[in-house]
Amino acid sequence: MKIAIIYSEYYPEVFKGQKKQILEFVSAHNIEIEWFLIPGSLEAPFMASKIIKNGGFDGLVVLGCVIEGETYHNFIIQETAHSALVNLSVQHLIPIGIGILTVKNYDQALVRSSDKKPYAKHAIQAVFDLLK
Image (cartoon, rainbow, N blue to C red):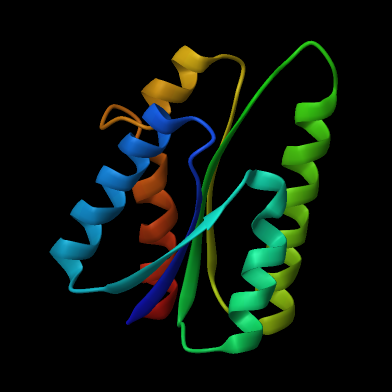
């Protein structure tokens, strides 16, 4: 099983926790992965589409973090990215685990990228389960 991991390091400490969860899961399940860096979560659908077009992967996982701000910008990013990723998954019949955290503040992001609430693990687990 080969899974593409699309990730943003926009919040480095958050990604550090997400990466740890992914590496622990793949080592326990003998999964081959390849990492694809993106600037932010809004670029995830483009990278996912490019990976799907080029082939070679059984599934994808997208990791990122969108934190609520003073404007509605975060809602636009999270809605656009999530909708486009779900559409790609259904259109191309390839599982895409969405591990883009959508939180109110940085502290919530740190918790959700830790072992307390392992959302990245849940994203790769979903892809793994769909491919078994």
